[in-house]
Length: 162
Length: 429
Image (tube, rainbow over all chains, first blue to last red; front, side, top):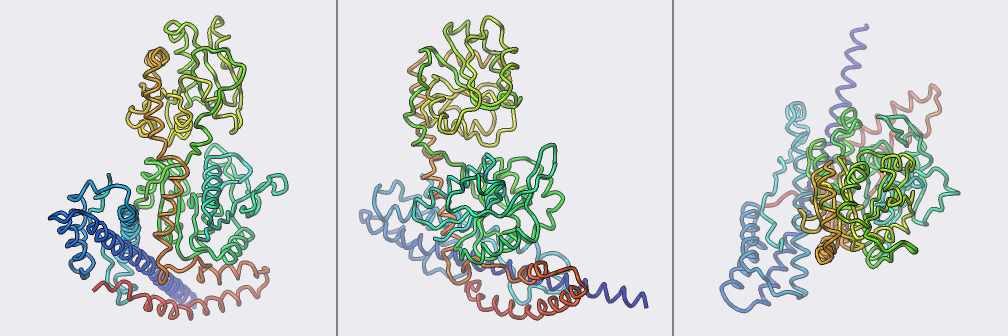
């Protein structure tokens, strides 16, 4: 009798642990989703701002490269996104110094700051989520369900640090 | 933007975090945002609370780690925190020092949605984190953005929480200090200013007093203006009898008088020996336009831009301190140059710039409507807290616990639905 009660107790504890961890993972994935949405929005904003700045530059190879890099970044799919955003950072750096005191440049500077912030928050969320997901029990019980393991987003976004 | 801020320490007790929350809130309100601050208050009738501050109740003093920690924890504070979250309908929740057992930690447990946390502590080892680290993790991992006020605080966050934080420094109201007038009725003599507790060893007044005889030899008319609470008699004892009339002790000065104290000296001296994580006093002196001579501590080196905006001297070296102070007092052009570069540096610490940076963080985490949404009371905690509130200690509580658990388990599929609906955002292809 005692054994049965003890086993039942253990079972209840196990169920609570599993549901609680699943809920925790659920929450973490929601945080990653929100962080990615923010990062995506800021990357798009940066690319759009870069195109606007490119339009204000004197026609020439620098303006053309910048515009092309910004367009490529806007059109990039999930696969090539990091590489395209890196190219854009590089094109922005090559275009420095940009003509000061324009609304386009101010928007680009804000967007670049936000990209840095959003990327840092996104990668923190990914790090927290992976730390739990890669533990033994959540992995063995597939507590994360069908969701793919979140990936870090690594680009050089220091281009505008003037 | 509707912003909810929690301050973990008692509002009517002076302190760095309280001052930070007060100034940040004032500047956010100045920019037209809706701010509500939840904080422990000892005496709501006496404290003269600003309209945006809501009391979470009294903090309970608990002796801890050699000093007294004032904690807020319990069903009543939890109830108030939840009501504040529910009624505030915040776009973003900003908790300060969520690892301190107080309202910030409660808010972390009780909320969900866009959350920002600022870490102030630079103490390398946090007892709370060591003991409760694992238990706190689920609450701390809800935080969408972490801010550290100094490089040292950032290191603590990385070491303890294994995640990076964005560096946004403490703010200073530059306009309040810039152009301050000297204290009236003081003799016109070359003056060195010291500000800080005079009986706290790490503030380093002893080093400055040790340097005084040599400094008097270099600059015969020099005077020392010492502002800060502590036992004045001990300070007099430490000075040779013949030099005592050169040391002016002001005692504790009010916030309003601080700019004038800095403006009364040709040099501000910060001979601290250790344990400084930021150096807000240095920034205040620099904002006044008073050149700074400070110990070569990591935090000070950063504020003084590696020595370009002030003079750095070896820590605890009275001889070097006297030489540096003497040389600077005799060189007005260099004073002007240092003051000019200091003014450049302090612009980054002006509340206008700091508030802008904090808002950048808010807007980054709260701007994305569909997945981020509003700050809400965490449904998971809701059931648990409801139980705590209604529980009257009778046998019936057990039955209620079981039914609550059952309801909680039944809620799981709904949570799963919610994630699936936001799945579109993860799908990057």
